[in-house]
Image (spheres, rainbow, N blue to C red):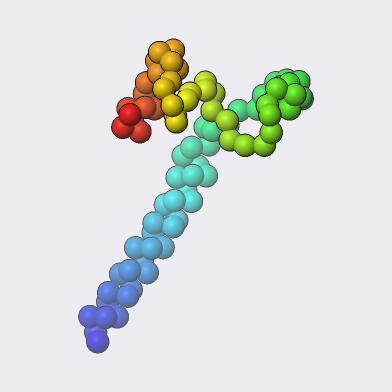
Length: 86
């Protein structure tokens, strides 16, 4: 029973440490890294709304993952395709 209490305390201490470290690493260490605002957001969004057929998830640059991608598509996506194993 004594071992169980030590294990429980160690587990809670480790979980608390990881939680605090996760907060510090996301809020302090990576400050300023991430998304950037678009300068002409309204113009870009209006162009996308008229150009895209509907709601969905779109890749840029686009690639045909279901069929045979062109040589240009494969070259643009070469690093990602290596990760996907294609």
